[in-house]
Length: 490
Image (cartoon, rainbow, N blue to C red; front, top):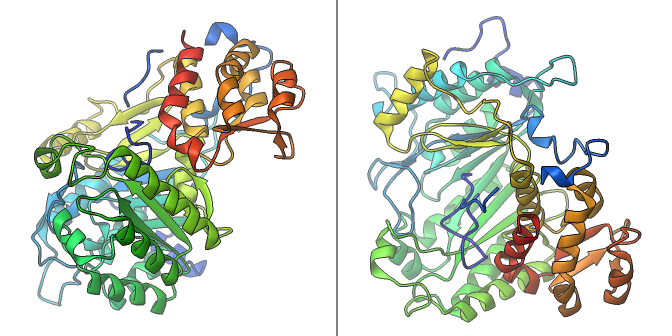
């Protein structure tokens, strides 16, 4: 997915979203052979010791990527909350396989051709510490838009382009965002045959009135049909996306959506709190915190309800907006939270290479021009060699680590960015450790009580990790992360 700015459980968004080489086996064949069924705070290098820097943090961004995000921007229509770069095809559009004398929708086929050209023209990053090797991709995420509107044969061509250029592991996680009403059992099976093995189902709500008020193109009946298709086709790894704090949404509606989602038995659930963007229809109609939108306190209760119900149902709350059954964390999204490099392709997509976040144009005409310039080597593709400021990296590590249940590894952080910075963060979090919003853990991830934290945090003897408590600490994540930023860049 694009790193989401439209939805957030933080209540104020943290902004961080060809032809195959004939000598190589196509990705589709590879799948069959392997049975694959920001607002940035201003820019701590002077505090870091050059003799103790940790490649896992300070140099993480220099490692070659093993993940790729691919933006497929097509939708039936624009939802009222959406500010993503999309191409609206019309409300009646569904995934179709052309008959013998038909062709694909040229808007889709032309875009996919341009997308494959971008992949082919992008520089491949290699490791400077491992014989200049380039590891194959371990995750691919098709986000949108509604990627399930793209015919499976065209999805296959994108995967073949990625495999030809970068290589793709035989057991790679290949995720696709899919909306109810945009696929059937035939297209689902075809997508599985070309390599898609993880589905993110854009449910959003289980009430027709809420779906209609959001401008969604599907209804509840189509949700149930989509869930049945996913289960019947044998998709083992699939997620349900839900949105809280929608206009006129009540606590009972939210609880009902969570109950039905749990009863559907997905392996993963993502819960996003609505963020009203100015350039959307919701931005024109509504003011955050004012009726018919819930108050901030009501939004917090929605978040607590999700944490409680999903936790009781056996889902691990492993990231602020993400819950999963054991063994089903989204590997691709974990790339983001671990601040690893990743490629990105397509309209408006943002890559992260060499510590630089590089966004492609959001308008189709500009994007096509960008790809042409890329082929002519007259523009950058995000693979640039800027010297990234250590303060920026430290802020990224803190912000992304504290979104997760693992939290911030204080030892690695201190080795990479300096013990004085680590100590400053511990000091600024002292009252929040006492209040329970920040949790201290030892080497074996056992809780360290406040009194022992005071004694040991500065000497780094006992406290190994800091994480935000669930749900109260997560609800204060913006404030707590801002405090850490101030400690890093006073």
